[in-house]
Length: 463
Image (cartoon, rainbow, N blue to C red; front, side, top):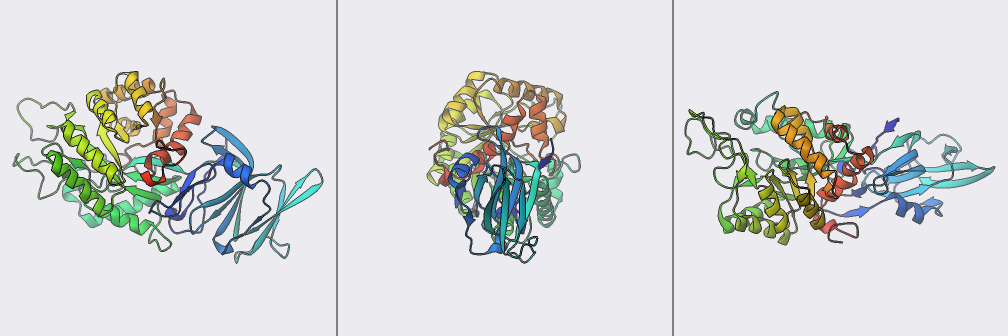
């Protein structure tokens, strides 16, 4: 199958680049969002022959022979997609009887770079239907298949592969300017790989740099190119549970003041930490609900256990989740153990990251009932080549396929190379998932995960 994935051209940032037909799109980073799906737009626009816009130079028309609809898991044929490169919105998706068309401008010539009114003449059984669109550019994909823009629900733009530089060294030896320049490059590589939306779940020692990067990627005056960017700022952890930790002074929380996350202990500190993240501009709250407490401590005579154990107490978790929701943000939890995940589901967490230790289909079913989204991050485990963890991750994913749990594609990209984000999708298919469902998880599923609480509508978990 020939696949063509093309974001709307003409914009300097994919925060202004709409995903293609069948996806939900937003026009800026302040959650001013709308839904465009193939079925609704087709029904509403079949009888419209004219599109009126204020500026033809911002409008693009895509002629698509076949478009994948992540709602129905089917293909829609002969689609004419109209979108605005400034707002990033798809204004209409219509179905024509045929895409045997002639395209010309007012003078009967091919559309000129300067724009103008474009007439699309559709030939069907000897009749000619004229569709008039004020547009600067027509993209002809009549012989190809168009996919919605992909979503990676778990990235770290401020990290690069551990095979290049260890996590500790990235945090302690790479200056913030270097890490930020890398993040700019990572944003571009991700967009060029077909991912038009990402959720960055922690700067890992880079402070508030993701908030600044989001500003550079957003709006009509964006400074660089990249996907629509949702970020979590600094992840939240309790004392002693995260690194990097010093090998010289074991009592220190970090090395030379560097910490991969923000520390919060007790109910009141947890509430304050969430408020600080919201005040800084975070779109999401990220917490570590379990972790390898001793994994980064200095070597000892007997190797410390690398098993994950609970970090926050239950009352602390409740304070984190309730405060996030009260302030209008959703909350993601790093969690791998069944006990931690079960507690999080009961308390109303929005997404579980990793979760490779889920050993019971009933827990997946509870997640499905409560609308908790699972982001498996298979690609990270596959890349790190820890055979035991990878085996558990494979077993858990196959177990999930027997349930209705909501899944979003997210590979923990940054552990491996940005631009290889689709590895997560490939691994899902390799482990037995239907490719149509994988495309849904990488488009609609991802968008349902990362979108803000304000967006939640008739198709949302709270709709």
